[in-house]
Structures are given as C-alpha cells and as structure tokens.
Image (tube, rainbow, N blue to C red):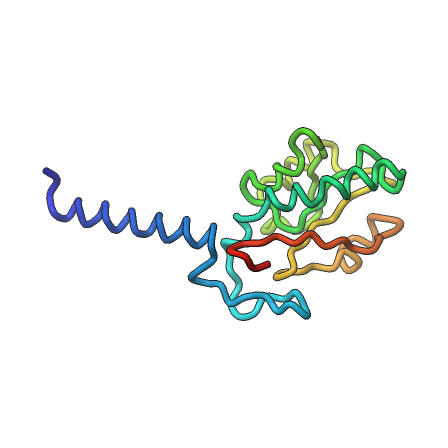
Length: 167
C-alpha cells in the first residue's frame, strides 16, 4: 500500500485533472457567460476557451471555405490567419480535407512557434488571400492590424461555438 502522503498527492492530482477537464468541456467554474447583444464575454476571461470548440469551428468554416473558393471570392491557396495560435488546435482547420496553410502575422507572444513556421513556409506574398479568425470574447479587428497586408478586408462571418449549451 502507498504511504498516506502519496495517496493524498494522487487524490489531489486526480481532482485537479478532473476539474480542468470539466472546465475545458463544460465551463462550469469560470463561466460568466457572453452578452448575447454584443458577443462580448462578461466578467473574467476564461483561458480554457482557447482549448475548446476547434472542431465546431472547423465544421462551421467548411461551408464558408467551399462557398468562397467555388465562387472565386477566395483562391484555393488562401491561408488561415488566426489571432492566437497555441498547441495543435488551429491545425484542425488546416488538416485534410481542407488542407489550408496556417500563417501568422500577430506578435510573437500570441503566435508562439508559428512565427518561425510562417517564415519556414515562405511568409507572405503580395496578393495573398486569407481567412482571419478572432474570437468574440477577445475580438481583434483585422482592419486595425492587417489593412497594409491586404487590398480588401471583407465583411465577417460568425461561426457560433457552443459549450454547455451556451455560446
């Protein structure tokens, strides 16, 4: 049998991991809700939102991608330009069947290793098309950041992501 301090440590670790998984998937602990009229997060920012909803985002983005490329509004080699890139989640948008290249232009502290991956992939070229992703609770207007990089920035689409029945 394990010594009592080890058992307590294991129990504590199990509780913390369970609480983290519940928070990521259900949002019970930090959920202050989102104001439905403005789309802005009410109260403190919940960093676990960055870990949730990428599959829903991909499902919502796929028809937009198909419509935009079929109509010629966007080229098939257009890129995804997210405001926050951490971990593997944004790559869900870029993996098959869409196969879109992910590049970044945001500051290093928001893009992490993807700043170097962007350079490795050849960086930006004049005339590129891009889909820009920003969350409603930490919205960043592309006109303020990227107007010098792109000739035209179109009207946004909204892709709702639901967690625990709320968006």
